Amino acid sequence: MRLNRPVYLNTLRWFLDSPPRLLCAGLMALLTYLVVGGMAHMEINGVSSEGMFDTPQALASAGDKILVLLAWILGVGLIRREISSGAIQLVLLRPLSRPSYVLSKWAALATLNALFLVFCWAVLILRGGILQADKAGDLGLLFGAQVLQIFALAAVLCCLSCVPSKLGEMGTLVLAGIGILILSHYAESLDQAALRAAVDFLWKVLFPRVGAFMDTDGSGAAMSLAFNAGVTVAALGGAMALLQAREFSYAETGA
Image (cartoon, rainbow, N blue to C red; front, side, top):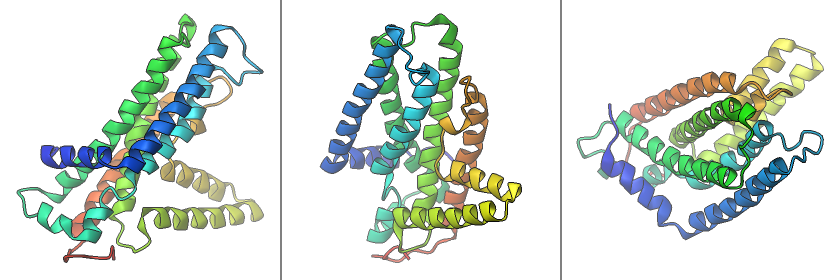
């Protein structure tokens, strides 16, 4: 199993040929510049505002929101669009395995999100937000954790895009979220620590994050690395298994 270059490049072209996606990504880039640039400005001038602008914490928190939103803007329809149109039939006529197809789709989405993450950090560096030598190690670890977060987000989207349902990725996500909320309600009403731990685990899988692992002293990025690496492998494996088990006909409706 290896990356298929034509599928990878065609998926990147699909992202770049969509004006609405490009517009949303541009607005996200502007928002990121304002948020990250403002964060750097506050840091370099030594203003902490009760720790709200501590760089590792703030980057993890902002990344959880911005990277998750961007991944969903770019990734909806990643595989499902080819299933629903029947185009996947033509794609799979090539000497291409289904696991390789999934891997190539995942890699394309992960690449775009990684480029966006590099942009965020470039803004931070140019604005002088990581001049503090004592935080260099924390920030390096955080960057690695956010790269794994991107990989996990792309893998989860691939998996949801392969689910045989007419609901689509968003519908599947909403349905899963409702199920977790119901479980959370029973966990609180029954005061079950095991159920609460299960709910927290499921949220972290459904929305791979870094900030969820960060405590008050800014640690936890290493734990996030390990967790999101596991989510990436499990979600990619799930997507490959789901696609491998399906039989396709032309012009499917996603069922």
